[in-house]
Image 1 (cartoon, one colour):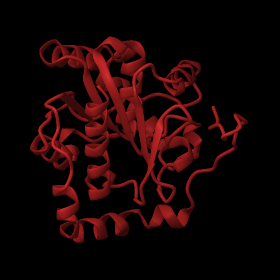
Image 2 (tube, one colour):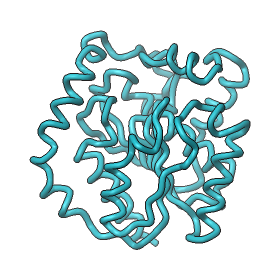
Image 3 (tube, rainbow, N blue to C red):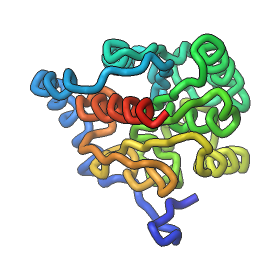
Length: 243
């Protein structure tokens, strides 16, 4: 499935250039080296309302990859937890029809009410799937560099996806699930994306049905980037004021 332009026509998208791909590691390293410059930006974020937030990691990553975001959001006043399913190996981790992930969200919602799901890359795709299947459990979805709105071939990681998950991107079941995930959600949706992402095309990381926030970032380490952390905190605070 291709992403849609503003007028609703299909766009044929390509994966990011080899130059952007090659720059991923240096850009991520530079971001970490200069992270301290943004402490004031992070400290100025609004205090939260105590809602439950679950963080979903990207492909092959575990909850450890989201440690900075989890700690930051907890300090801003949210009940922030990881998904607790180990490394994200796609359907191997979440189970058929994401039943294991839905069970985790259901468990958290039973104590704290509907959960806000924040998913990084593949984790964001899974967050949208949960919101579509069980909107009663989900308060809102925030995706970070998640290529949910277009073809997997508009990424430089589709072969890695196939290897890790054991699924083929052209299988009918995978294509049907991808189309379902790209459908508009019935809960508030925000997509944080970067046009300079070296692993996934930025245009397939947002669509017209979600509030889009553009950042300048590599894909690697995007969940650690101060501007992304602040954007997530601002979205959560804005949703609190709206309810």
